[in-house]
Image 1 (tube, rainbow, N blue to C red):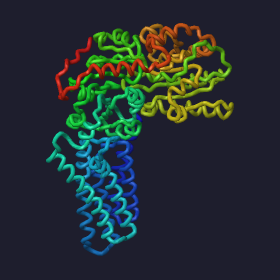
Image 2 (cartoon, helix red, strand yellow):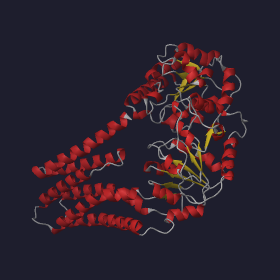
Image 3 (cartoon, rainbow, N blue to C red):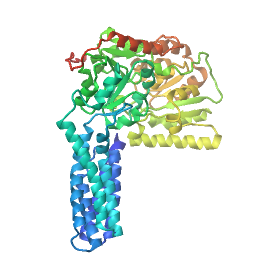
Length: 565
């Protein structure tokens, strides 16, 4: 989070600072060439800011830059009053003032992918800001080349025509909405989806959906994915052939929730889930995006859902242990279908000369009570593994880079692994090679043991039957296994890594808790046959669909959530 803040502040300072500097140079000095160069640099900074802050408002900076560039243009032409340049100024002023409102209006429109419908207006509206930056840079280049102002006017009119077409279509949509919704609603009614996956999360969280898409597709019923943030729309649409709709408002949700829908699935406890849960005619099912002993895995908000699909009985016990009272009939044990491709090793293998160890440090979390990150002692862990001749697969959490300290610690680990690979030839994996080129399942299958923080990775790894170590970064000591029961079947590494040698000896040599892991495996992942393991989830999902009736969709009051103190 702090890393994102630094990037956003840097982008803001660069955009504003360069824009002010460029205007001052162009308006107050005769260094027109330098001023135009500074203006182009400011426009590049504004483009970067739009990447790190999609909602950034740079109207003031755009006004300064447009004014400065036009002053520089007039000075370079040195031809007195130029009607074409004056007209260019008027068009640029109109664009600068209209681009922001048009983009905001476009952001409120429904968008669709993987449906036979084109929603060009919101897409063009979202790109008008980029078009304005390119236009201003082009005008600055024409000024530097002393090109006729008519050329700049022609370019400005082309962009202005596009903005005018967007404005006209948005006005038509507001003033004369189609009966029964627009083209997206019609296409969805023709598709007749039986269930939807509702998703709201910060940018970069699409993995929470993509892990479930193959299994939602295997249910064998038509469905739709509804995302609530624009940054998630494109990556999720590219990951499936199912329709994906972006619904920024509750009004656009009303358009997308067609009468054929029966069930709504969720993969997290995002605040915007309540916008969909208000539709009482749907059966609302929480899937989660991982199973772990972390505090968020026993979120009291789960009680608002009609069904809670859990991997095993341990998840139900977790809620009770946290004091969250949820009726037993809401829970359905379905296993963790994502582990079906993990290879199971039933025989105990110890004292390998050159083991492969998967190390999966988690991130620091949104809150201090969810910080289980072991990167502060990561160097000691990696050095200990290397000293034992291990090949290390380092797979960090996708959010690790949001914390600058964690990013530096992770970079240090990659330096260690790169140096050891160069010296010994051991094929350590890290970065994209471990996090993007390989799936978690592939990393599990390549490894002989796991070192992990408290996270859902341990539950998934448990399916393999292979040994694992858990870091106690909260400093619970003897109480750690009571608070995080998965640790009872693993080997607990203290917060200061003072018992690292002992833990690695148990993990890689003796493995005294091998038998206990199989008992824990059934509690956490369900007692289902290995062959066809995912069928438990698929069958449960189909039962919910078959049990749900089809009724006209309208928001309905739901019982308010009252968490247990």
